[in-house]
Length: 633
Image 1 (cartoon, rainbow, N blue to C red):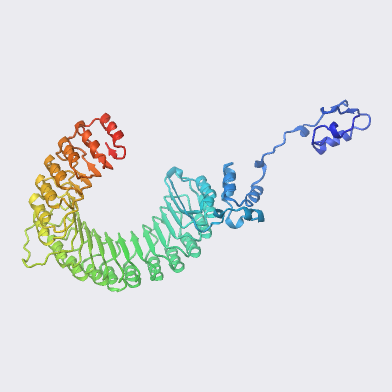
Image 2: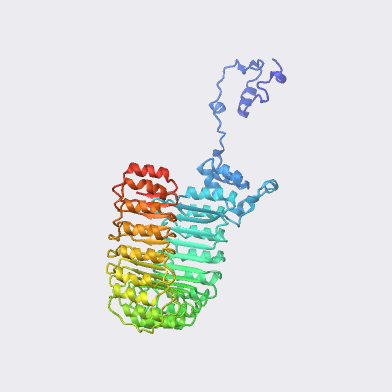
């Protein structure tokens, strides 16, 4: 028998026996067995015996046979972000395991710390923003974000906007919590599958959280808010909408534990009442700047607390508060706590009457903007508010049907600093002849006038406005079928500052005369002109615009009577630099395309919808020639 070493070994660098079982079989044969080992050959055994199948059974060498516990121990020793991302791309199982590792569970070694890059050490300064919508919102994507964001400075803002196709559970939120401790903003919309478990994990791990927005998450309760309050002292903004399980205790905890809270919005949460809102407002009186309450079961007590403790409030919005009465608004205004309030919006609150409105005017001396919708205010309340609130510069009234022409002009005359007046769908206004004193001082502060869909507002009212308002620069008169050229003329003629924006869309009785007066008197200042739906406007108007309005950047003559000649006139204007042009529904044809090409040198937007005289082939050629311009067809 040859020697079993040197070149006579079975395989180079390999032992003779691969397993203990193989060794025992050979050694147990005894001396009567002749075994021959030729050089570099397989062993040949002359003794008759059978090898066990277990000896030659194929061994599994994949790492996947390791249980999760072993892989977890391996993964938690990987500290580099690039190495983690590489491992996560191997399989979904590895990705999920890596995303389940908390920051405090990572085992740092001396070599790993020495080799770590700067970005791997940045856990508190997130800079990435991610938004998952619809079917793209899944636990797997959240796990990938959790693992992959570490190497790019960390995740700062995350929005998950779900729907029926979304598959986000608590596991996904936990993954984010474990890997994105730098998170400062979290938005969750329409996620019925998550509950307190996921939010509590976020609260425990993401302690830099500053903004939280929860909408249509029915399984989330006050436990989540309590956890946020206990662990996220930097919270500055909280928005809750349609979360049916959140109760007062959650808001109470937020108020007590979040001293930096600046903005709170609560909408359509049926279990939130006076106790929660009042406690929140009173506890954050020194920091809370913005408050929005929408569709809640709160009473006059809550408004009284706001009026007394809202010393830092600058912006308040009250919507659909049906249990609040006249007394509540009166006490709110009389509380003398709203000294810093600058913007107030009240929508569909039946308790708002003249008495409460006047009290708000007196109690909010620095109020700049007031918006009222669906209220039973009368002319007396409106005028009393104007006299009491001398800092007001903007008022927006919508669907206030008790207010008449007299109240509007009384408000304008008695407001010392009014700059913006907007009326929308106020059907109580009737166009009646009015006499105003000849010695009445003009309102030189009003700069913007907006009247939308108030069918009773006509020529008499516009003429009066033109007589007393001489500094108007922006005019929006839409959906007023009763006005004609004679009604608009006083506004145009008496504007000393020069009109910059004019919107007359839907005023079907206006003619070329009005457009000619505007372009002749204000062509040096006019920047935006909207004549959409003014069917009596013809090419003559566009010609005067092209000749006089050198600063015009936006022109809308949709559904008017213009033709190709008007487009040619615009293209031939020497100093015109139009950026947006709309000729939707006009009688233009392919003949206009060469002129549109020339206009395309400055155009960034062109609306040619429902222009039946323009073929699709011609539009395709135009798109290739003015590719910088967005064309709607």
